[in-house]
Amino acid sequence: MSKSVCESWFKTDRIRDDLYLISEPHYYWWNRANLWLIKGRTQDVLLDTGMGVSSLRTYLASQIDKPLLAVASHIHFDHAAGMYEFDARAIHAAEADALARGDDYEALCSKAQGWVRAEHFDCLPTADFDVANYRLRAAPPTRILHEGDVLDLGDRALEVLHLPGHSHGCIALYDRASGALFSGDVIYEGELLDELHCSDIPAYVATYERLQRVPVDTVYPGHYAIFGRARYEQILAEYLARRRRPGCPSDGDAGATTGA
Image (cartoon, rainbow, N blue to C red; front, side, top):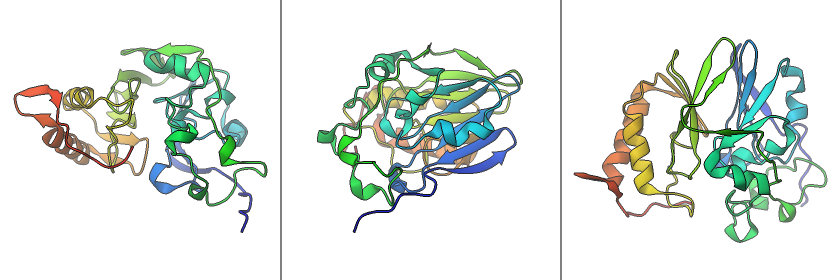
């Protein structure tokens, strides 16, 4: 039976007046990304743009009333495939070239990798959508991000933290004043994927050791539910206990996990 076309591919949940969670509810829950619209006085930031299968820019049009910077937390297709729609777009330097050339392999959406599957769509985002034609569209960044950069929204500042491990260019945005961490795929509730071709377990260990020293009150993750300080500290400790060799933090444990 052929699938119907979705009435709306996206869903928005208001967290606060200055923060909205956009999701793609008709896509497979396990790999469904959280897209965060962070509103400021002089500029808005959209952290991650989803799969790019339906127009996010059109969907958000009524909510955008000032300059908008689209930021990719990293290159993977579930986070960065919609970047091409936005005029101002930013990504960490380590993955800027991959976004600029539309690198399906680095985005995990080449056919051979098998991550984008027809059965993962409950309905079609558009009438002409075909999984066989899915790819990362080239989107040359207009801003290259580095560790320590600050995104000034007028009434709040978001600091760029370069946190490799899941992929080379993973970042989080940190609001030091409120203790909020917009973490992308660096930390979230659920299986942490650290054995991808672009992953680096020792780097992930170093990232988590660093995060243990970052005061965080609330995590707004790239997948699944928001959580607080206690769970944040628990996830960090559990991962380090599993992956870090005592006395040798630079050598990641080669123990297996599932997933890709």
